[in-house]
Amino acid sequence: MGNTVIAGRTVRVNGADLYHEIRGSGPPILFIMGASGEGGVFQHVAERLSDMFTVVTYHRRGNSLSPRPDGWTRTSIDEQADDAAGLLRALNLAPAVAFGTSMGAGILLNLMLRHPELLRGAIVHEPVMAHAVPSGAAFGAEIQAMVETGLATVGPRGTMEQFIRTVAGDVNFERLDPELRERMVGNGEVFFFTELPAGVAYTPNAEEVAACGVPAIATWGIQNPEPIFRESAAWVATSLGTSMQEFPGAHTPYLDHPAELASAIRAFVQGLA
Image (cartoon, rainbow, N blue to C red; front, side):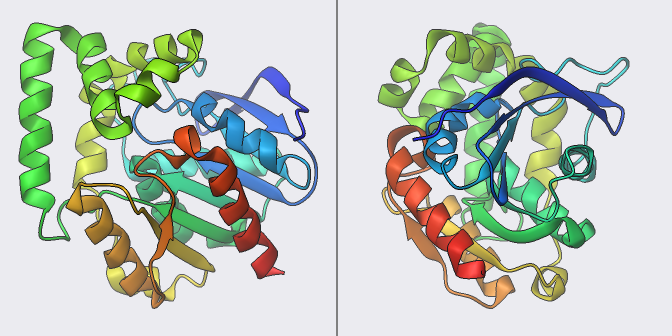
């Protein structure tokens, strides 16, 4: 595995200072995180890919080592996609392949629609299309109840821990590097009060997804018991006019199956040549 890292670097894009790390050299791959906005979760996948690729991970605005912009109290998926676009431009790494997961998959879809020239390919992993799939309403109500109860009892940090345990599993949560885990739970306030409403509300236009022209696949974790993620990935695959692909694990293969995920990403990128 490669392990070349440029650490502690920020770049000003779209009105925000984005902390990012760059590993390796070669064709660029950008990773976009969902809940917690913490790019450090991709470390083990990024290291495995850095032997052949320039791998970029970043903390989304207001999360972890990317400071909250002055007066920033709400966001949109457009804004988040513009951040990713600005980062690729600032680093002169376009066109890139991008991997987006969960809310980050929604950000990637928006990036595909609004900045297609910056992308060579896209892997859309388990998006949350709550308003487009049959299980969306029930899932939304479940999450809302968990968040409301958690915020009223254990606050943003405790609720963020509950949320991560729910989507990633207790074992993955306990295995997180302590500093990484601390940053993730510390991002609870930003996630619940600033990001979550925008993430839940976002559903791209299916016809626009079909016409965007970016080579892309939609993926689903074969061990994920939540139907919304399979349904959402299938919705994206249908919109793209392609079949849905299965990844190992569930919602967070970058934590529990990094080698297999790296191999799948490598195969996708090499298939674009």
